[in-house]
Length: 414
Image 1 (tube, one colour):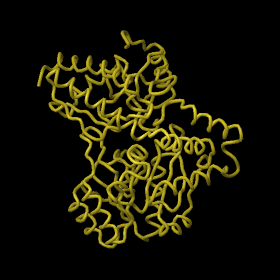
Image 2 (tube, one colour; image 1 turned 90 degrees about the vertical axis):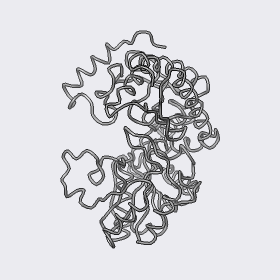
Image 3 (cartoon, rainbow, N blue to C red; image 1 turned 120 degrees about the vertical axis):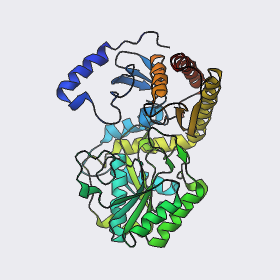
Image 4 (cartoon, rainbow, N blue to C red; image 1 turned 30 degrees about the vertical axis):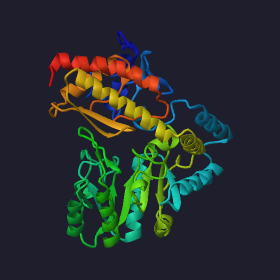
């Protein structure tokens, strides 16, 4: 555990960044809203651990916000990436791994007849929407209130810099409320190109809500009835619950799915998978990117997918996540604190039952965890990986026990 956090290098870098970067940092990794113990800059990662630029080590329960599934610096993934890098990455066209990865995804994911690639989750969700519009000849898109599908104008929650017209074709429903989705579709009869939905509700600052299978089946039936495409946003959940697709166990298959984060163990890659009926529209649109066809990330993805299958990655991260959740429940009870643990073991969310919108208890807990060598987040779901062992979880629980004691001392029992 960390007895005294050193922040000299971190603070120096941040001061330099503020002179050349707006606010010094931006986006989801900006720590300005977190407790002051959070580092902004990191130097390296190995297995399930990261080190900040001042050399402070952490057991990482954010996994680079989802991309890390096999462990930082995984030997097989890095070897595959190195082999491809030595041959070439960004060339005049794709490398053979482009075809090999597309074949692997089509073979692995039952609803997929074809694959397309990009670099980030926003690329994938936006490309899927565009294909749906091309395939249906319609403009309107339905999504759940509060859902995160990226930062493109059609779906961004932060409206700064976005013209109202850019979201005029987006309408909303309540997650897990089929009546709400049906009403939203009825209000736009004959105009809906797609319904975009996450495998579970994982908005920030609230409990994670697992999908009601009847809602999933109902949305599938609704899309079939109105002639819209069902887009499943697998960017956050994909490859963490079922290698075939998160909704495959409940028997619901989308027309299009968007993937990123975990599919290449930290290398920048995204994919859209689709059904044959949308192959021609996908052919007709024009989409591209200078770095979308780089072979290194695709080679890393092939190794990641193989590693996840061969090492039972889903099972291992599920077991580690359940061990963590059991320990947190026991600790909270022993400290007289009421918590809400929601979501699945692979992507748990923990909030304090007595917290208000300011999340003061969650902030105190998370800040104390960071001070004691565990990196997690006060407002966002956490991530487990196949690299987290039982010993790692037990070590992390030593820090969370200290953090619960900090919350108890500051706010009292509940």
